[in-house]
Figure 1 (cartoon, rainbow, N blue to C red):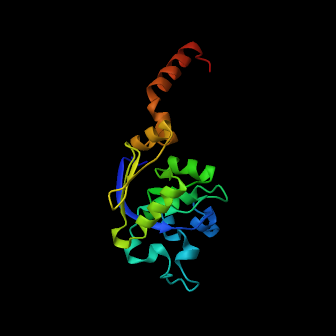
Figure 2 (figure 1 turned 30 degrees about the horizontal axis):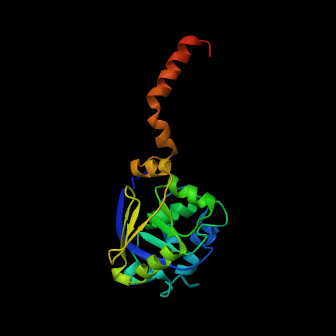
Figure 3 (figure 1 turned 45 degrees about the horizontal axis):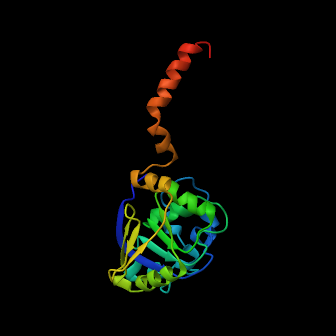
Length: 201
């Protein structure tokens, strides 16, 4: 997966609590096991009207937020079913970072495995970042993973905590397969010795 080091991009405000995975990517999009192409279905029940036209009131349909890379969301983001399609859809759309006061555990874990940085902040910090995100074309934030800081458009800084192992994985672009491949030499050595010790196996 792609490394996450520093991200500077437009932050879209979504002040909705309990955004569940069915809202993120509705069930009709779950037939595929491909990680690409799901961006068109992201928040589809809010993004589109029944006739398929865009809902102009939805934040990601507004001109200032069409290329948003950061989502500032309400409490308990990613609750509901454990579908990995949710982070796939966010990533395919272009969202690399989601900021909230809390996340559902499975969604939170799935984000790290797919190159998305979920950041937990306090309620007061979220209010400030939500205000920053409501600035439309001026709602640009910088997320510095190494420093564990979010820099707002007015120069304000919010620091965030993150598990060191998860930080290491994102900085180096390591998913579960990548972590395994880091041990390739040790695995090859073990298998070579095993073949010598147990040639019948």
